[in-house]
Amino acid sequence: MAEFLSILTLYYACDAAARDRALSHAEVMRCMAHYESVKAYFEAPRARDHTAAQSGYLAFKTWEADHPDIVAGLRTVID
Image (cartoon, rainbow, N blue to C red; front, side, top):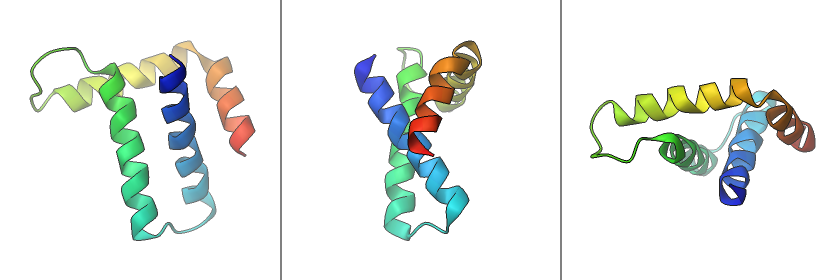
């Protein structure tokens, strides 16, 4: 879980930076890698097909909804 929270913190930092300014190409690529890592954390352990990323995203959004205090805490630290 600690590794996931580290990746999630990076993802939220990217989100905050993108709200404040345009990101460079290198920053966009790094942020996309963080986003993909977050989704991958939630993907079901199965062969990767075209639905794996979407199911990972939906599971992540469910996790965020179920853990608003953690999400708010991470976003507060970054903002």
